[in-house]
Image (cartoon, helix red, strand yellow):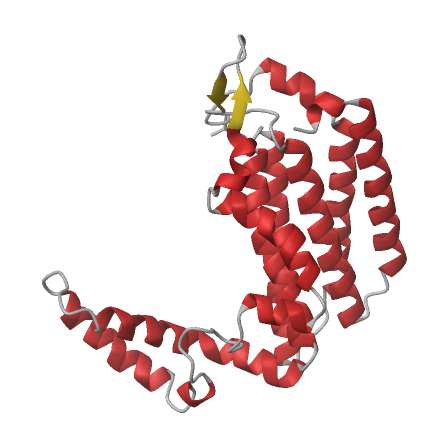
Length: 276
């Protein structure tokens, strides 16, 4: 078997040409990826000897993975889908900021909620009056098993609707001074994530003759925004994670942020047709 396999679809030649115009921006995004790799290298051999370090590493790793997925989508011409992943990255940053304000207690609650959440979901299903045949029996078994694992923990989560933190994402964002970012950025990301009317511009085009149409595959629409936003969110995570764990990469991260901002303005100025 060959080392590589062909992609499941072809990228149109026109898109490849437009991506080349955006090359400097994509290179700057690659620099953000290298920073993520540098952070992982700094972590090599370090003990994750507290709940906080464990949770922080997990959240960072998830954000890094989502960033790489968003960049891959952009290079394949799926900018709107990349923006939807930025919602997850934004949530990662808010959660790590929030946990860092009370690292012992909040990290513990984050970990404890794993089995509690499964129990709450099983109970939610069980409250339905009618279930497919055999399903209730299966969920009763799940509930018995989960009750043992979550014994003594449910008391910390009296509100079944507000998750591990017992606060909504907006409340967590507000508590870490992220209220404006929630309104300005998260709103946009969720528009693409949930196919809201406000984000329809991300997958509509004007056809020859002036008629409206839809993007049904790879297209340059929102690639600029998806690439830039995902890199910005990831660099925010890098800065936060570096600060919390004292990795000594603050100067490199600031340099990458400044370079990304400079190049994004340059590309937007030289190729305004790409910023759609």
